[in-house]
Length: 252
Length: 264
Image 1 (cartoon, rainbow over the protein chains, first blue to last red):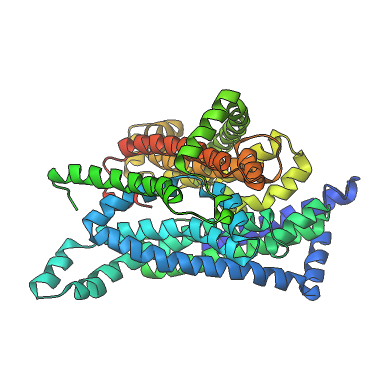
Image 2: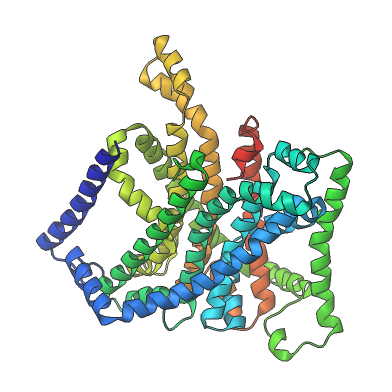
């Protein structure tokens, strides 16, 4: 079945690209508003050879990586404490839930105006968007820890440390990996919005600049690269999810 | 972990405290400590924000921006429901169509839809339609994917029962598949609302002359932190109200599901 899916999927992508190319070679079109797959492919090749693309990718990747790492380093401990200390959960849950459910991207202008147009502001945006999935999934993971296992460790004289290391952490891991999947999507939004808003380099900047200057093939090549990166990151996490939480592997 | 009844009061108190204490500190610190001018440019105290909010309301400015944003949100979300639900059901029940569409759904769903914004502005201009489309693109995939999952996970045994008693394909859909998919659809709607608001805000940041996102961005760049925070506050309130009301519906529809399944 997987083979059929691959064949049909490839077929539909090829058909889409070919139709696009053929239709545009038959009708007159305005290069300010349209472009062809062939021109996009040429632009991708030029940008890869030109080196500008690699530079933009590296700039965006840096902001993403810093913000994402910060989200993990802050989010998981907060989630652990909320899960394990009831009072902490009572105090933090309403505030953090409200922040999680609200469009924090609305703070982007403030973040950029206060933290500047550099990498730091974009990393901060990524952090703001990506931290909440880690907090809440870790929290849920701790709460779903098998109480029987907790009792066993306690009965055999285990300390809090044993509980954390032997029971809670392992049960939290699948939740954290699921959080990473959500956080990747949110973090990418942070990078893009930050770079659309105020930047002089980076993938988001390149895409918006090429859009502003009507260079559609170059703009599409930026979008294409971003799509490849996004799909790549997501599928890596999905693989990981299939390893640590096989019961969730079927979902996309 | 089941909660003892005596806990609910403590829970309420702690929760309220966690909201009030930071607000009080936020209000008090700038009054007590002399903050450098640079920071004052970016910060407004809660009382200043309240004053700005009242001013925006009386001048009618807020209502104007809100109307534009709400229109973009409603049209975009409406379109995404109109496309996402039928397409999700179709892909969930017809295997070869699912296989054909899979690369597109996966790639578009994994890529932040915001990336299409420059193109949409180029194509549709700075009016509401570029924002409507970005809202649509953001909201349609959670709806589509969740409907798809709901249809795929429908109960085979129940479907067989309906068929055994002579039920038609349509009856299987109506009696088994649709009710089974409903909780998934509502969960998808909750996600879609969040994406839609994100689309409205970001869309209005970059290519608009009206709307709440535009109001926030222009207030930020003209150093009016009070107006900016007022806008953020209104957006937060709206999205919380929408999210929690859908969550309430969701909780009712999924009462039978164990806690663990709800967290994702």
